[in-house]
Length: 478
Image 1 (cartoon, rainbow, N blue to C red):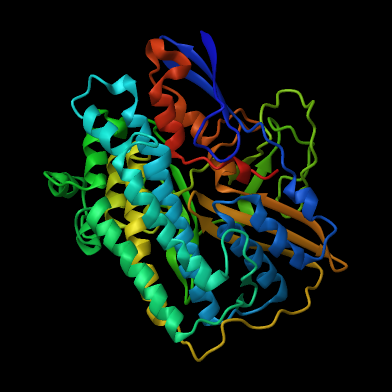
Image 2: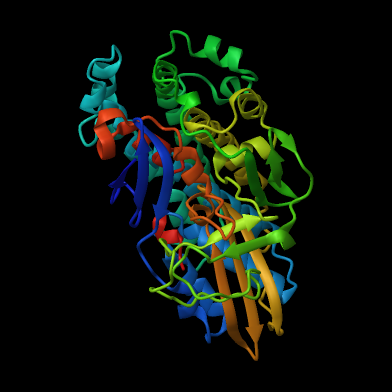
């Protein structure tokens, strides 16, 4: 048995290290370490509750809107407030734009460049991958990054700036959209659709979303020139559906609230939905985190560092649902929502590297159409925000779906101040350490069995598995 350390990973927001025990050229055990302590929960304690709208978005520069919305949702629940419908629509548009932009960044900047590595030089598809996806040199980034930048112009219209906007409030959004601005939003949405249909899919979004089975996906991609088809051919050549197998439990908090949720909330186990989401069964285990013992209930817990804790190896706590680890992210969202293709892929091969990437791109297509729908639904002569109310003492929760998965803010107010503030981010779920029972987190389990061969810490297969979860380590905000 040989122990190696992989990291710090590049192309990751924040710091990440992975310790691997290798036996017979394969990973026998993995420990995922978040070596960065940030302490946002402690920063928020003792402040007026509305300060969360200023501080929480600064947890992260790439999913700032998600953090804003989680904080606003928690405060809205505390106020027992009903937000303006226009404000919810505007929030959805901005949030979907941020999440779609994150998916593009993951695909073109974080994930696909690994296929241009010299490790694959003998593969027939390698030269095309280098030309298209090589970091800083490939032709794909020259098309994708301007499209991403144009999409994020939505933030300027709705929120004034991005990241760290104050536009997202418990009662809605602070800026009322005028007719000219709606025309501009419509043009941005049309340009984004055009990029997806021309570059990513080489087909209409409607045709892509009509694909309902793995066999239909194979027929669709045959002879197609888009980057999605390019990825699918590489995925088949490298058997990425057999790499990074997930734990079989997927969770979504539900996403984009307006007259219900656009993506459903729920839990899926072994490709079967298992009913309503048991939010009261969310706990945090600190047995292997550099944290002092506290209540396992995030509504009652605190985050106090203990850098000398025995057996600890991460600043990340271990979130659990009903005592079990769960995987979150686009694959979980689309599988729980029963998107036809993703549900079929999960039923066939479960959670794996290929299916996580496919789910992100399918979700991006769905978000592009949703953005168009929400822009049309805006009622420009109606309010976009309602006034805030006094916040009584008590506990409340704000739950959203960031690009990387389920994000929750647990807020406790006492005497007009924040008594406790707990954050469980998507990367906390996926990159958690072991719990008191020794059960590994989702990534730790997904890495077991991965072949590294003689490459050891340089094995590109490790990169594929880790990046398939799209880590954002700064959001493990403890």
